[in-house]
Length: 414
Ligand SMILES: NC(=O)c1ccc[n+]([C@@H]2O[C@H](COP(=O)([O-])OP(=O)(O)OC[C@H]3O[C@@H](n4cnc5c(N)ncnc54)[C@H](OP(=O)(O)O)[C@@H]3O)[C@@H](O)[C@H]2O)c1
Image 1 (cartoon, rainbow, N blue to C red):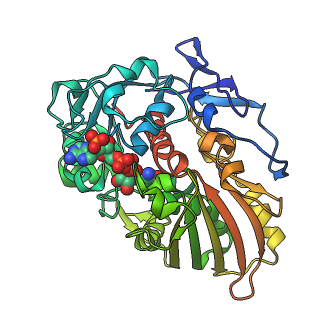
Image 2: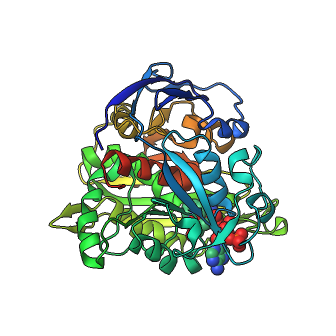
């Protein structure tokens, strides 16, 4: 499949894209309902919001996709983000046997701020059985499955020839599976031939996301790692309630409270981040050699994780201004690739002294942009900063969508 770039005009809340010559203006409109902009702040970045955005040409026909775990927190976000997508058409939905056989609108306890997309409300939910006829023509599978069940289900779909984009932890640390974050580690796609070889899969494969806190941290730290090399990272997270899925924690646990335990999250941040920054050589990952110490807390914020990070570098930068400049000048990789869901900026620096904040920054880049602020010297390490990323968009469903768009551009989805 050959791709050329088409110009498309984009503002902060609407996207116009070319779809086989026709204009598709509904794409991503669903997210607008979540946005709540309050206050004034200075964002330091090239002001390109109204500049023409280059979007890779659409495939000759829409690519049929399934969403597994479609009824859950991540699954619902997939449904929003896929509504009106210029390349992907949702044709099948999967969830547990409890939901199978019901229309999506009945099976799902919809908790998003916009209605269920019309085209999807009447799709009958199926069990997550790759041999089920509902998945007959599906080429791409987006998985928001509970990790208790995701592993073998995702493998069965990949074995059948589907490109599987997973949010579950099951395959993240497999030696032949990338934890792909396009602004950070595009080269990790090179592992796919080895994965297909070792598993005997012809056209299918599995690509995972990092856990949502790791994704935001990796995008924010990538410009710094590239220049000075990470040596030690100390991170304390304040993670949103939606990160625990639905219904998640009870209101009695969450109101007026902070819970200083998110099972397995600290270990995930400490191990996954080294693989995210790995080099790929001779068909294998060679993990980065920095150390991470994470402390993860659940706070009563609905969407979006805030993280306070202290960093020691292998080569110390001269000043915190240099660090800010590294973030500001870091190119938007996803946009330069022409991915239709790409934000104007993968990472953005906000120089207001009290930013980022979840309520004010969760809609930056429609949830695809990681915001960094408060870069300053550290009395113990070299520098400290605060970062923010939307957990179900850039940290989950949106991240998978970018990964899938990238694989289409690279000709990996057949
Ligand atoms: N929430 C986040 O911010 C976030 C971020 C990154 C990664 N993740 C990961 O993404 C995955 C989904 O998280 P979530 O927060 O969306 O969880 P969730 O709200 O609990 O949703 C879980 C989904 O899995 C389905 N499911 C449960 N048992 C099943 C079974 N036996 N067979 C097939 N499907 C089954 C559920 O279907 P029913 O409705 O029918 O039970 C539901 O659709 C998890 O692996 C999580 O760790 C979540």
